[in-house]
Amino acid sequence: MKHPKNPIASLSLDLDNQWSYLKIHGDPDWDQFPSYLNLMVPRALEIFRELNLTITFFIVGQDAALEKNSSALRSIALAGHEIGNHSFHHESWLHLYSEAEIEQEIAIAEEHIERVTGQHPVGFRGPATAFLLPFLKF
Ligand SMILES: [Zn+2]
Image 1 (cartoon, rainbow, N blue to C red):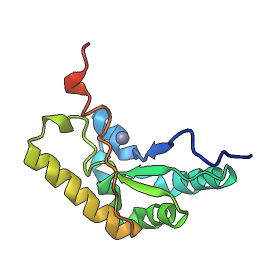
Image 2 (image 1 turned 90 degrees about the vertical axis):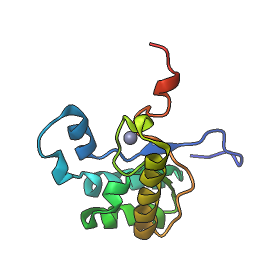
Image 3 (image 1 turned 180 degrees about the vertical axis):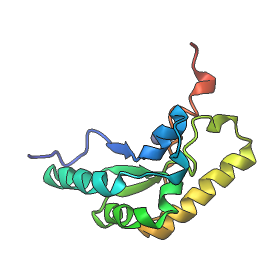
Image 4 (image 1 turned 90 degrees about the horizontal axis):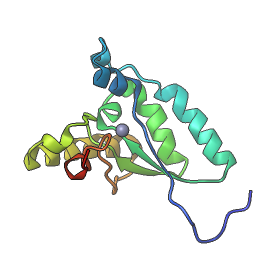
């Protein structure tokens, strides 16, 4: 596949893990942080390698804090993709946090993500539509 020299789009993927869906649904055992990153990340990296694309992966800090995810998360950076910050706790109600709590949330995630991937995350994406909700009219 041939790609233009000047990119016409920006691609990103939020690494929402299994536990974050269980948590939002109120399912038990989400706090054991079940993870499918070891299964999903190698497949995603293979697809992007075949397509000759580098994208931005937004990583949840809680996943970076757990040793069981380290190898998968490190492999993303080693494959040349950009690493972004997707909060620490991945809570859809992040917009209800105080400013200090939001700063803490982002800083802790940043610390773990940088330690595991060796890359300083520049971009931040809030979980779900956390930062949009106050501005949306339903
Ligand atoms: Zn997410």
